[in-house]
Image (cartoon, each protein chain N blue to C red):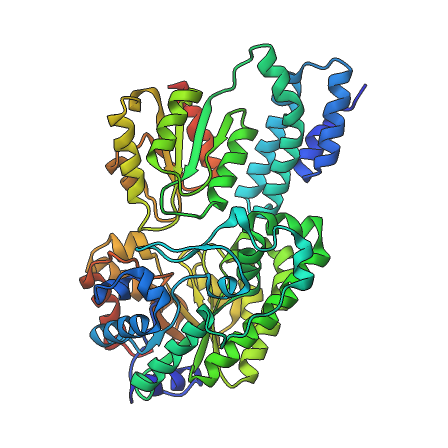
Amino acid sequence: MTDLKKLYEAVVNGDAKAAHAITQQALAEGVDPLVLVNQHMIPAMDEVGRRFEASEYFVPELLIAARAMKSALDLIRPLLVARGDKPVGRVAIGTVKGDLHDIGKNLVASLLEGGGFEVIDLGVNVPPEKFIETVREKQANIVAMSALLTTTMPAMKTTIDALKQAGVRNQVKVLVGGAPITEKYAEEIGADGYSENAVGAVALAKKVVAA
Amino acid sequence: MNSRERVLAHLEGRPVDRLPLMPITMMFACAQIGARYRDYCCDYRVLAEGQIQTAGSFGFDYVNTMSDPAREAADCGARVEYFDSQPVALVEDDALLADKKRLATLKIPDPLGGGRMHNGIKAVALLKERVGREKIVEGWVEGPIAEGADLRGINTLMTDFFDDPAFVRDLFDFVVELELRFAREQVRAGADVIGVGDAAASLVGPQVYAEFVWPAEKRLVAGIQEMGAKVRLHICGNTRRILNGMGRLGCEIVDLDSLAPLAEARREMGPNQVLLGNLNPVTVLRNGTPEQVTGAVAQCHQDAGSRFIVGAGCEVPRDTPPENLRALCAYAHQHKP
């Protein structure tokens, strides 16, 4: 039998090849894919998040851990979809229109995925219509927006207003973050939540989908 | 003493009449003259006008040529996107060095070849001509990890540190040479100070910083100083874990973002390092009141001690209330180090 602790270690250490191989072997042995996710990969990404918060890990370590997790998820996700298992939530995430900065958004996307969410990454410079389309067509229940610049952050409000006009605002929770964003600003523009860091964003996403 | 004399004296540890004042303005300076930010980035005359007007009306001790991070990368052939009212930005999905093999054949562009670097050099020359006797003229280059990220794609570079350390070293060698050539022409055009912006350095931990980034930054800083210019290092973001290394670079000015406490920097860098910064540019300078700005800059001064230059933690945001920026400036105008 595969030693599944090694899957945890492979994710924490950012070893994508090992994570992929262990997952492949475990699935071949008949291990339930949800056991791999819930008992090994999510705890591993929790540990990665903890180390990131404690300044033991930094962006490079976090990104290679996320890559390792993805290499395992690539094998697992089709199996979960085939049997009808639902993710914790479905997040449409992107950097707002006019802003091409993506590293913060990518960290949040990775940790959300590590937290059991399905993440639809819309990339950078995302116009409001793209968020609306994703909510409609992919049934996303969270819209997560990032902005690095004070000059682009007003696009968050524009997007929220567009979600309202399109009649889909009530179907989703809107989360915002990025260097110039504050809790107060999030409230002013009518967002449902703000986190100042990527680890907090996952806790926030879990909270809003449970509400 | 005039502004230029004040800053130079302060950097050399000689007495000055008041605290020097060197906040970074780009979009704010552009808005002061009612220009489009696209033009501020692309036309050195607009940039110089914005800087001179802003420095004059707020009483800054310097002018600066920074506008966006994409001058060098654009001249190397990287795809960049221009916006009417935002900084020029790199298109990461189409990064120039998405294929690492391209580095071997990539040529360092001529800084005087009529591209975006040349435009920056012309800005230095024009600023020198118009205000260079009175104020410090500061040029700008990207640091090794910032420019490396511009060429390679920031997300990819972050994993390269683990996947291909030899490539990262080659990339940083290329970048240091590129930036030294750019800096040399700016110094020749009259820059007293060269700002080195190495924003992405705050994303890595102390090990990656020490192994890859610091040695390249050190070569760049030492090379600029050999040209006879002084160096202002600015790393956006949280640099708390690399403060010691930043101090050991020997820069004349370390300009800190608001996430790195000045008191910690003082402990890590010793009593002689000139520190610049670092009140929160958004929550205090842009969103606060003049009284809050005064309180915050006074705290910065107390934490940094006498080897201190007044500025915000990063760029003064475009829509900062002028009275808030005036409060920041008034502190410098009214206080001795």
